Structure formats: structure tokens, C-alpha cells
Image (tube, rainbow, N blue to C red):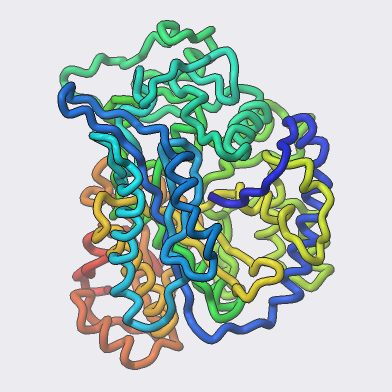
Length: 544
């Protein structure tokens, strides 16, 4: 769930006043981490996964299901082992945004041996059993589903609570305050500060699936929910309207983190996995229903993106820049904007907004241009949650100011420096995968992506395409039935001049046919549109 600092949360006005302080010291903390770890090498692969579970109550007699608001109570018991014996853990548990969610990870990272692959599903089953043991009332269960179909419908939780459109953190027409996790102030603080920074409620408009019975245009009268007119003005015809952070951050996902042997390998993995984000998201798609309506999308990604979009009207380009510093093209939760490897710089073909003063400061400290721009891009954002006890920090020993902004840039990939005072190395986090219904399926995705990282590194494969095409692919991946109908830009030739002969043999034996890796091509000739089936199983043609 990102940084979970303890303390007294500041108001948005107080947080805004400290934004420059957080940015200044956050950059100092990053520079210190970079200098300390830029030459550090680790011997072996370490990796792990995060699975988010949804607590549900099933009333079989009345054929009704509700979200079970027991996350705080369940989590307190789940974390007891960590409090008492932190050195010997099989599982680790953390809170999530909503009080019907808990997040579980393995107690220790997995390693580089093949035997670890056999442990993934067993550990996921163990996590599910640990939760289920604490759900003792009839009808209570834990599901791994992306989003609860009735989230936002009347009386969707147990116990039931009414929304409060005129007060509270979100002021939602549909999402009660009591559904937000009460055990840590971060969650309501983020909700309130995103709304206040934006200057209005978040507006999430999801295209509705139309059949013969769907009104055209489909448009709800939101006054029935207590709308004063703000939500009606923000809603679009033929769309499902949502108005709270909880509709996005209340979704569950499956995430994987990999420790690289050094900073260069981490940057390489970050770049090579980025084009795979839309592919894996389309493969794992599992969230077509929102607020009880069947939508015309299959994935949660852009729902979450809009649910935490704190950009002001000026930053969104709706008004001329006067008070704000930048025109920002994306939400805090979106795809990455640049590759980090020097050999992939030519594929950074979109206009990435970054703080030039911060970039200059990083470069003066010795950070190279690409990494400096990446960090300076993250730091165009304001901190949206700050605790009074964490304002003044020791920049040599702490990194909370850096993590404050890093952890609220929820991008498709995350490049993670080593934490201070630890033996953890440089890591990358793979974030697009939708959680699956069964432990077997979740384990299969995790093992598949881990094996992909090994193949990429061992065979020196190159999957990089222009970053603008990755953005287009992400939009395609969210569409209904993208798995079967979508066309995605993908690399024609995966081999490089450094690929060993064994790699060439493996690829030449697949349905793609022979590959001439010595052939010089223009950038636009390096990729083509393919279906998911063609990407996974090969595309038969004269050129591939």
C-alpha cells in the first residue's frame, strides 16, 4: 500500500505549505541513497508478490452479498505473529484502502532456485486460510476479486451505512466514509487531500455496455442520491458515473517485486517489463462491473487512474496556467512516461513533464540524465499526505520524504531504490496485473512474470517499443474483450546482437519462423500490431 508513516496528519493547507520542503529533502534523500548504493551488487534474485483479498458476507437465504467491514479487526489478529516473532514469518499482512480489504505477502522473499516456484501457490493458499480462519460468522468469506460488482449500490456493505454527500473526506453520493479503513489516518487523509487539491470531487466516467434494453442515451438523475448539481455536471451520457477514491483504490490487484543484482539490471528490467504491462493486464482482465452496471471495459486501470486524479483544472489544461507550475498530462496513477536505460532513450517519444531545477540538481550530484529526468518527473507532484511528526527528518538516515512522493506516483512500473539502513537492493515493481479468483491462477501469473524476467536477462531479449505505443496499448488493454479482439503494438524481433545462439534456436523453433537479428531496421519497422494470441504463441508471416 506504499508508505504508511505514523503520526498526526496535516490538513491540505498545511501539507501544501510544506510541499517545497518535502520535495527539497526528498531529493536530498534520493541522492544520498543513490550515492550509497549505485555501485552495490547483489548475488541472487529475490522476489515476492502481493495479493489483496476482499472480505464478503454471503446471505444465501436472501440471495444477497455485501462487503464485510472487518478489515481492521482481522488485520489486528493477522499481524499478531509479526509483532511477537518478526524473524520467523510465513506471511506478512498490511492494511489496504477499504475496511473490506487486507493485503498479504510472503513472510520472506523467494530466491533464485527453481524450488521456489513450487512454494508460491502453497503460500497463497496459506494466506487465504489465515484470513478465512478469522471469518467465523456464517456466510463470511475472503475472495480474490478485482472489484465487488455492487460497490456503490445502496446498502452494499455489512454493516450498512449511508453516504454523506455534503461532509466527510470524499463527499460521495455512493461511498460511505465508514467503508474507508479506519485503522490508519493515511487513507482518509489521501481522500480528503486529493479532493481539496483538485478543487472538486474526482469524476470517474466508465462507458456503459449497451444492449437492446439500455436507454440511449443512458443518463442517471443523480439528484435522487442527494446531488447538488456538481456530480450531474461531471457525469457523461452513456457512462457509469463514480465520484470517490474508493471506487479505484477499493479495487484489488496482484503485484510483483523483483530485486535486481545492481542498479543497471534494475533499470533494464524496468524498461523491458514496461511494454508487457498492457499485455499482462489484458490477459488478466477481470473487472467489467461497476456500481451494479455492466461496463464496456474489462480492467480497473483507468478507474483507479481517475479516482486519484488530484490535478487542478490548470494542470489538466482546462484553464491557463496561473497558480500552478505545470500542465500535467496524466493522473498520478497511470503508465510510465520514460524508459531508464541509456540504450532505450530514443524510444522516449512523448513530451515528459519534469521539474528542470530538480533535474539540474540531480545531475550536479552525478545522476545521469535519464534517471534524473525520471525522478524530476515524479517530483512535479505535491505530497498529498504528510504527518507532523515526519516533517523534520535526518536525510542521511531516512527516506520518508522521497517515499512520500515516490509511493503516491502509482505507475504501471515502479523503480525502487534500496531503503536506508537495510541490505535490500535495487528493485522494480510490476503493477498492472488484475487479481484472479483462485490461488492457482494468481500463482501462475506470478511465476510466469518471474520466468519472463529470467528469460529476458539470460537471452538478452529486447521488447522495447516507443513509449507512446505502450500508452496506446494500455488503452487498448482496458477495452472489452481486448484479450481476443485487441491489436497491440509489439516488437517483431526479440533477439539482440548479444542474444546467445540458444536463444535464436528457441525462437526459430516457434511458429514465428526465422529471425534475422543482423537486419538493420528503422524504428517504425521494429514493431507491428498483433493480437494477444500472436504475441504469446507467435505470428506466422514471411517477416516474423
